[in-house]
Length: 572
Figure 1 (cartoon, rainbow, N blue to C red):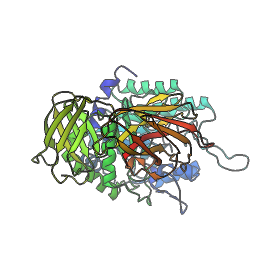
Figure 2: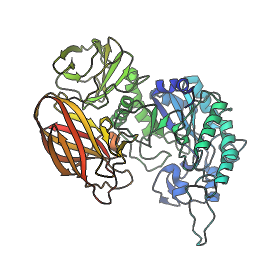
Figure 3: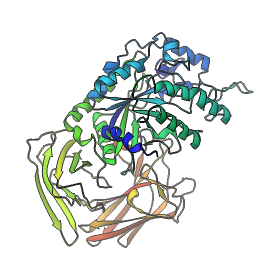
Figure 4: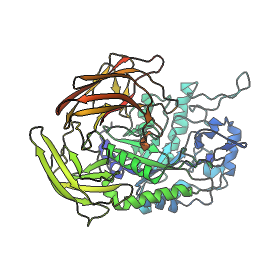
């Protein structure tokens, strides 16, 4: 990455929470074409409904967002606790939502509205101290010749076909020079300082072309970030998949784009709104992994953000008003595994416990080596938090015990801040927790064979029986334990895996087939399912360091790779 990347990222790392806006002429049909509800994402209706370019162009003549209020949009983002806005300046349909001298297919020249909403947003963001950022589809363009996915002529049978990739790479190169670069020049010279360009779906773009566009952006605005979806891993930071929540702490700088319902662009009949509880959990889940949360709204063709979106964001803002310091400017949890009671973030000599399940007994935190100088409950600063610490020298186990008030100050997520004697210092070895359970995430395992860990934290490339995972953890209380294996499903197809595995814990083994005995209820599993397999029971015979190994003895034919997220041992 360029040498200046660290400085460019400072504001973005501090922000942690931003607003995504998908808005364009696709808001006119709002998911319905010729009386039929079209499956898929709202902003993909041109492709999914197979709408020819001349017909789709007519939507611009109906796009008149007279109720658009840039001030209201920016104030909503600010109330929600967001620090930056990323809005679609041009999506895959090729329509420019800004004044463009290089492309007449734009909101100023082709709609009754006739004004540039990006100018109004730039002014409002400047007034309220938010960073304005632009989404720009650099590869897919279904309207411009040469763009990936461009609508092709009727084939010999008279059928319309979509091509994901351009048939001619020379035409694609010309498209980058004649369409993309002039658009980027306009976006980066007409609206003042821009926080980042959020590229998307790189598909056929070459590494050289990705680097060229990145450098072009940096030349026009040296401080402007380039998102990871520029392609070929040359962006200033990485982008998770849509609605993808990693199961483990990630290395480097990452962001997850996410929806409030199931679509990005407005669909009039998508009412599958997430709850405030789930949205706040995802916010702290991502912050605890060191990942930015870019949460989307899809305004209507009139220019209104749907009322359910407004209410959800305002509820998140109420929580942020009290607990912002546990999110803003924080780093990932110092622990590489999760806790049943909630998540953690850290900032300097402060450790934040974001508690989603209020304990009915003292909360014990193992492995924190620091001396706790003080403890504060952000939502009830007058409430006393009693801290006791000890060090079991035989096992070199540090224990912090927190005696909390009987009732949680917040019904969703309560935050306790621990003020420490220095930078946060923890023993990262997995440990048996106060409830007796042990969490062994795949990303913490020692890898054998061809298996790797993907960006989500689960295993990849586990396609044969020569690979395995192994861990060490510290047991406090021996006994019999139920074994739950969490494997990742496929968001696009039904889960299917019956591999035979062997788990060995401290010399004691169980052999079982991976089954579908339950589904994770974590909000992070909504789009990337986590399937629970009950493998049986295994004893842990003594306290101390325990060795664990997971092997595949037999691969089920036709079911692909083994995608392990975690092994859990639960007292039987």
